[in-house]
Image 1 (cartoon, rainbow, N blue to C red):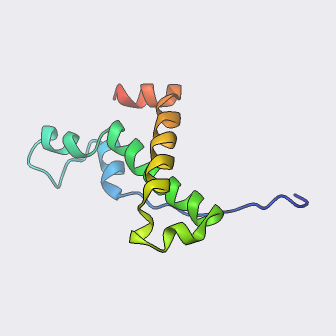
Image 2: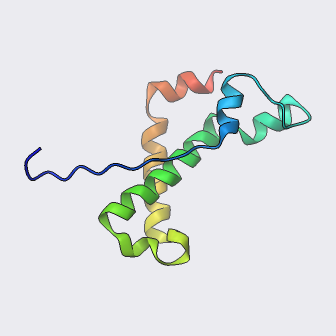
Length: 97
């Protein structure tokens, strides 16, 4: 890749998101209660939040040293990433399930 840095990170998602996709609501009393916490909107929030941490860890590590990395820069990046992810056609398809 020459002089281009390539960063790799692993982001772990709660296994309950996988359970939702498989229709396994075993930890909750009802499907409605489960869907309240584990839906396409929640998934986008979690992914954009964790991506923001990952990006900031690579480009501005000091931003992650205070308040668990939660600050104005993180919030703004999380919001931008959420908007980007919601613009994908895959998000619309995921929402329909």
